Image (cartoon, rainbow, N blue to C red; front, top):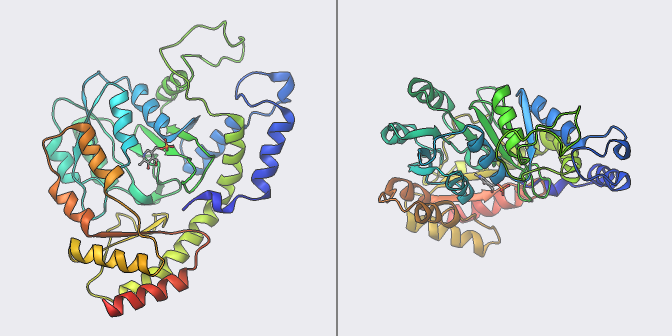
Length: 372
Ligand SMILES: Cc1ncc(COP(=O)(O)O)c(C=O)c1O
């Protein structure tokens, strides 16, 4: 999954150019920077890549989510629906924005269950925050239908899904805002970093002002003498992150292509066995193949299978703690999410890399299955 696997001359050269120019701040320093604004360039290229009107570089995926929720100016203490299976940052950003996370079950797509969104929606709901877990789309057609009929905005957590699509449209471009992470383990990495995208000019402005203390970013006035537009914070992206982002974005299509090839090789080995079933994809062509997720018939068998994998040098991913129990603890909900727990307990996950011995892993898995 990580873009760091393909760091090369392109990243080194871009970062070196920033250091030689000496301007790491995205705004101002006009004489010294000689017309080079890399964060603005990365935003433009990222927006083009997604087919979105506006993109705003921020300091992390968590910051992107917080910026989006603040940008919507939702009434404090209202409820935001989000899946129980997500990285804890999704929940934290809702809480940090003064809102109440309401967790929903997932289904066998490992993404939020639309049925459960419908059962949890109420007069207190101010937003729906679906998460495209492990690079694969939520059921966006149904989610947008619920959103439109209830008049409730969607913010997409696409932090794990840069470059993924649903029915030919990039994830992150369905909701009012889409949020991305470029942290060190992501498919496109800037070390730490993130992006907020939107098609709405007003929402873009709100996010732009919020992420930089309320600065309006006027080109006709010096920073520090302009009017403050709203309360904000510092979630700015810097020029080194943007330099990495520009280089990595060029490599993203080939990263995804390689993932798909490696994943297909490994999946083939497992497809022959009836006791294995696979994660459901709402768009199997559009996913970015960062993970292969499959199910064993029950928890005991899944644990046994993972033990066999470990014994044979294949590392199975962990889905439960930071992505499930920590969320439930944080929200202090009375629901136990038995349905989701049962799905996660049966699941086995393999991270797909650019540089991996896919054929060898496929052979090992085949051997494990034959003896299972
Ligand atoms: C689903 C999800 N949301 C949000 C985040 C937060 O991103 P960051 O680490 O860039 O703050 C992550 C990071 O792993 C994530 O997986």
